[in-house]
Image (cartoon, rainbow, N blue to C red):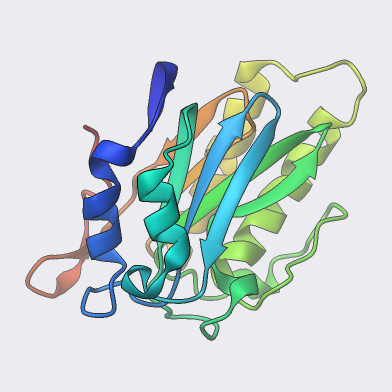
Length: 202
């Protein structure tokens, strides 16, 4: 959720919770990130949402933010565990960067990690995030503040182009200044093979 003013997602959190319930399609973990300037509040758990006291707390105590990234997980690569639960967050250039991915990226684990970031878990998604941060590192570490949007956009676009041949590469990434969304393809209702659209814009 990206908004011109701070708000909360209490209005849609109930539906989000249903998607991550033990009887839903994505029971292997959930997470939500609330941006607050260059920092974030991140809550995530490697369990279904219907078993979570944290979900109930967030529904009763909504956090206001102008940018919120959430994810419910269906484990396809990596076991059900906290390190494998999205969204992932790392510091780069004095601000938090957040990444969430849907799809399978076969072979991404062979991609070199150019920066100082390393995966904590064993998912393709987190490895992809560390690859992206490595590609962004030089732009962010020049010491001249936030790199231009065009420079960041070009790096994210090149990264997305590299991912697409590896499998469905739907991702949301934010550097606390801009929100980048790459909608590729996904398995559609009815179990059909992956095809566009990879995301929906409301």
